[in-house]
Length: 549
Image (cartoon, rainbow, N blue to C red; front, side, top):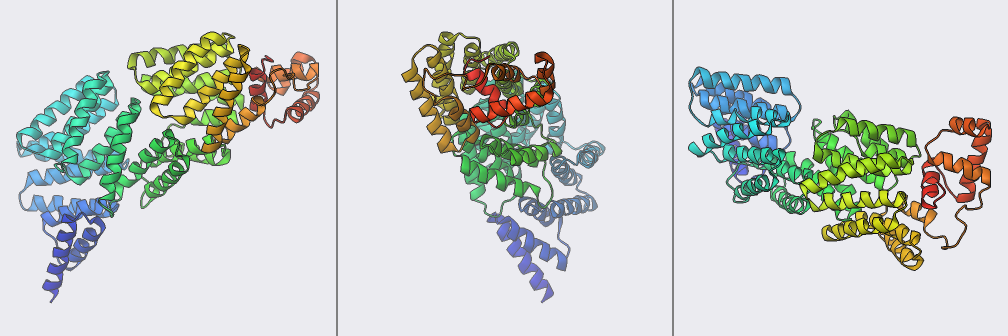
């Protein structure tokens, strides 16, 4: 009876594995193992099922048992294969020391036994990715090419797909984005055809989507995110890749203006990546959640999310610096974005930093710094020639030209940005550009067209729930064209406002105007009351938008 029960559980586990019911397979195979030791092949099935069900510890234990069982049976190649997958899982969890130990063990098995098989190719992958992440794109490409050749020689589809993915990423990193993306698309077709195993498929899906987003190939990122969602939905008990999938879905939905759905996906990603063990992707999920909270004006929630992202090792800029602007902490915003611009050197990563730098520099009155950042961004965007980057660069150029007083030239750049955002169906970014178009039209005396642009932008902001943008428009867009822009401020209050707009503290203003800090604080309170403002950043924005500086 006991043998029959064990056999039944084993059969059910194998059947569930074939149906891709990963949690069920893990449960049944575990139950069978509790009654009688599993052989090495079934231990490998248990390891895969447990991993895909999100049970990392159970998966690692099964792989380790399978490794030792293969050694006992005199099967060093299979033992080395188990060591590789165990190492890869540990490295992805951030356990790099233990993962490195298993890689070294696998290498020793291959070398000591003079093995000539796909294991040699698999063991090239960690070195390839380490070389790529350290900036050695050409050397990494060579390593991946060798691994792919091994995979092809031994007809090992997982190895070929993973190596081709590495080659594609290396090409992108070296600047050959067209060839790199073409290679990544080729890899994805092999996954769509069902030629690649589930663990490798999930890893490749996430890597390809992330690469597309990094180079601003948003259309391709949207397409592969939809494919990843379908792939996950076809395996209801799948856990590991659902967290990363949700992050990508959230980013896509945010870009297309579906902010409530994007918020739901980001929160769900945070939950799934935090349990049963903290996944390295939790930092990115937290940052995405922080971005959504910031755009909606939920400062406390955004602060907590950025802090969590940083704790998990994800760089919290430029989101945190932009949050400081909303909070009125302009000195902190300026310092943070300057530091980020110095630290982040890779061109594609710098684009987001430079865009935020322009915005923050203009708010704090540092037009020279804004001009420099906008010029740098234009150079990168022109070199990469990706539509989102070109639109972003045109927007920042227009903003700087407007601040410099050249409204006509600003309009030309802003038209280019607007066309780009429309082509990408990026409603929020398009609305931000429309605000600048409205201000440029107003500066040129075309008040009717200006009001139409500002009205249109406000409608988008309200629909999205972009509270800070609505507040900003309500402060400056709804006054009549010939209304006194001073807002009823006294000459002394205007002096204080102009100095606030340059980023000076109350102490600095007191010293410059020969007043007490208490008097400056009273003037600032009066300014807030008369203009209906609540923060120094809002006062700064008012000053620039109404040409008081």
